Picture 1 (cartoon, one colour):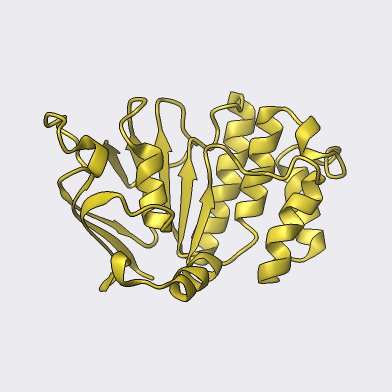
Picture 2 (cartoon, rainbow, N blue to C red):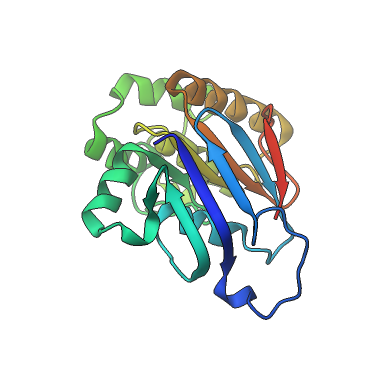
Length: 214
C-alpha cells in the first residue's frame, strides 16, 4: 500500500455541523507511505473516528476513502484481515491491552499471529522504552504511561505500510516521549512506512512532513 486517499470525507454525525475549516473533513487529502503526518484536533473533532475509518472499524462517513485505487467500502472481511496483518498497524487511544496478561504476553499475542519479531527483539524493545523490569508484570497493574509503551511495542510486532497512532504519548513524560519517538521513527524508516499521528496537543517528538488541523 502506497497511499491513503480521502475524498470529501465527513463523519455522518457532523453532517449538520457548520463548516469548521477542517483541513481533513470535506477535503481531498492524501497520506503517502514514508511520510510522517500529524493531525491536530480539538476534543470531539473526530480524530479517533478518522483512525477507525482508515482501519475499517467504522464506515459511518460520507465521501470516499481509498487504499491506492481500492475503495474501502468494497473491501470484504478477508481483505481487511490481510490489510491489518500486513499493511496497517494501530495504537488505539484506549490501548486495548489484556489486563490479565503480562506486558510480554500482550505483545506476544500479536507477534504469534505475524511471526514478525523474535522474543529477543521484543525484550530488547521493552528495555529501550524503559520497561525492562515490567515485562512479566500484568498489564492491569501498570500505570497508563507504562501501558502506552506496551501498546507501542505491540504495534511494532507486525509489518506495516502505515502506522496509526491515536494520542499515543498522552501519559508519557518528555523523556519517555523522546525515547519512544526515536524507536517509532527508527522502525518506520526501516520499513519505509508512513506514520499518522492524531493529537489534541501533546504528540510524539518526531519530524513531521505534514501537519493538518482536523
